[in-house]
Image (cartoon, rainbow, N blue to C red; front, side, top):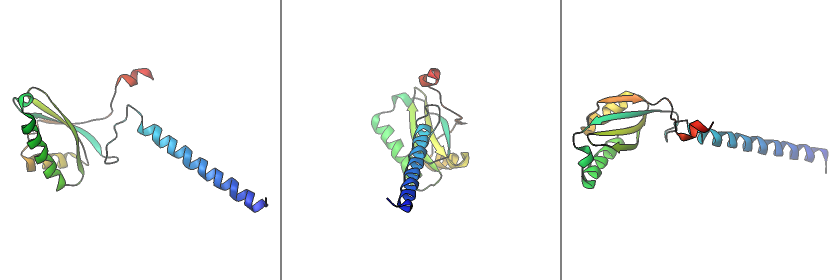
Length: 132
């Protein structure tokens, strides 16, 4: 094997290993159970508290209608994504990623949804946090 070929082979192996290690590091970051990861990259994650008396008694059809309305408004917006919501007796807690709170407020106004509180999520803990 020529010296030039050997140098190219070593460089190619080095490049491959560098890319492999980088990918492993990114995967490890993505699997960190204490890190909030949104589908929109580095946007802030928020919890929105909505007081809706009787929310826990809403029918599946009612919840579908509300969801469709929210998704319809979101299609016209940028800088905001609805991740999921929790329905309790008299409140709905919605998890969003957004560029800022103005996007959340604009979405609520357009859809006619109440917002009683907006809280930025700083980190997430779980049972896995105790196992460090």
